[in-house]
Length: 295
Figure (cartoon, rainbow, N blue to C red):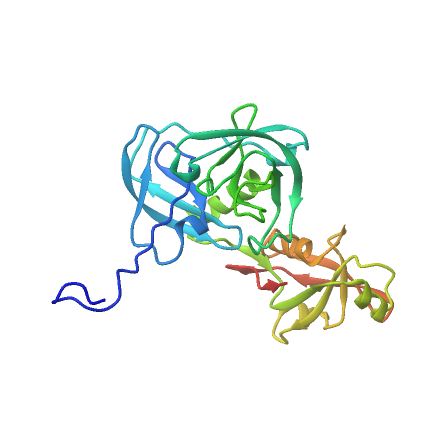
């Protein structure tokens, strides 16, 4: 139990995390998943395709989207160009590139199964590309590439009952990853829109019937701070948010994304249902390092 006579106590608790990454600039910026980097990381080693292993540092991380930005002191690196992920079509061919089970530079092929997937439980801010390209442990943080060789997503996770590949994988869209990376480069964190702290819930059929509304579309405000911008503007617990700046709100996850993506300093107009009546409320969008809207 004690080992050497001069040593006693617990074993070394350092952990090793393995994953993949994508070089996005010739001067050494690398994108990966936040869960690959982990918390309180002391040392990062990045293995390049030419077998070089370079010490890297964390520039910033965003747990809400599971994106992290790393930097290595190397120049002249090959770069994968960003694609416009909003142009992705269901059925389009894609390639997943990474190092599953430490098998470096593995490429698997599949199609885009769906876009805009949310409520998966991977991250606070979810707007995933779903693909059936094989994604396994070690693929996290790797590239999802379209047929033109452009980066359309950062592979993040899988849905599996066995722990292995079952044909359902998820990637952070390139447009979202690119926006997060820009903030991490400039601020070291992500600046998002906020309307102050409030807790929102999904409308179930039972809640909808109790509140006297016709369907389950919208987001129910269940709790909020009196100091929040939403409260100052007139929003109250029990209100159902049904649209945000003219966009119909289907569920709390969508409302969270709409608020987070709003321009800081702008004014938003939301439509709410209260006691069977429809009301419009204008409220300011303030800056938040991470969204305070919770589900």
